Length: 424
Ligand SMILES: *Cc1c(COP(=O)(O)O)cnc(C)c1O
Image (cartoon, rainbow, N blue to C red; front, side):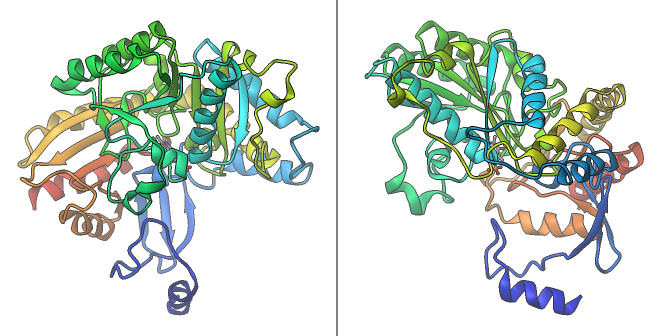
C-alpha cells in the first residue's frame, strides 16, 4: 500500500487538490452500497455520493449487469450517421419524465459539456433566427456550471477562475435570490430581461451546490422563469446536481409550474457509474435548427457522444430510480433529514439549517465569510474521515447528500459525526 501511495504521489495529479497539501490520498480497494473500503481495511460511509454522483450505491449489481451485457454487445460507435437502441431508449424514457416541454436530447460527456452545449444551443438559437441583439447570458451570483471556459464564464467569478478572468466572456449576474434578497434579485433580473438583449438565463434550480448548498424557494424561481418568458429569454435549468431525485422529485424543475426551455443533466444520470452529459430542449428551440440552411446546423460533438455503455448504465439507473423501493427511500431520507434538522437547531454554533429533498445542509456560525477557503475545512474533513464518514465541507458548510440506498443505521452514524463536530 505504501508503494501504491508513493506511486500516486509520483505520477498522479488529483482534481481540486493543492499539490503541497499535507492531506494524504486514501487508496480505495472497493466500494459497495454506501461503504468505501480502503486498502488498509478502514470503512468509510460515502455521505456525499462521491461528489454528488452516486444514487443507487457503489458497485450496484443491477447496473453492473447492464454494463457488462452492453460491453459485450456494442461498446461504442460513431454517433453521427449511426444510432443505437440504448441512446434511443434513454432519450424516450427521459422525455417522458422530464418537465413537459422537453422534446429533444443532445448527448455529451459530463456536466460541464452539458452546460457548454446548453449555452451554445441558446446563443445559436437566436443567431439562427437572426435576432442579432440577443447575445447576453444571465446567471446567478455564486453559481457553478462546470470548469470549462464557457461554464466558468457563467459561474461565480472567484479565486478558482481568477487566473482565467481575461478569457471569460461577459455574463450578467443577478443577486442570489434567497432569503430577503429575493425581490432585489427579481427586480435586477427584470431590468436585464427588459433590454431585449438577453439570450438565456442559466440557473441551478432551488439549490446552488458549489456555493455551499444555498437554497431558494420555488415561488421565487417560478417568478424568475415567468419574467424570462415574458421577455423572450430562454431558461436553462442546470440540473447536473439536482436531477434524478436529489431534491425529492425526479427533477428540481418539477417543483415549479413554469418550465425551462433547456435542461442540463449528468452526475446522477448514470447512477454515478459513468461519465455522461445530456442537454435537452423544447421543440421550439429545436425548430430553429430544423431549417434548410446547413450553416444553421449545430456543429458540436464529442468523440464519445452517445456512448452505448454510458447509455445502458443510465437506462439501468433509471429502472432503479423509478422503482417503488427507490421512491420510498427518497421519502425515508427526507423524513430522517427533517428530524435531524429539528435536532440540529439545538447545536451550539449551528445556523442556516436547511433541507431540500435528500440534501441537508447547515453552517458553522463563524464570524468569517462562508467560503471554500475557510480555515476550519481541513480540520472538519479529517475529523469526519477519522470517524468513518466522508463529508466534504464547503468552507464552513456541512452537508449530507447521500446515495439513496443509505440505511437508517448509516444515516444515524453520519448525523452522529455531525453532532460531534458541533460539540467540539
Ligand atoms: C458538478 C456540476 C457541474 C459540472 O459537472 P462536471 O461533470 O463536474 O463537469 C455543472 N453544474 C452543476 C450544477 C454541477 O453541480
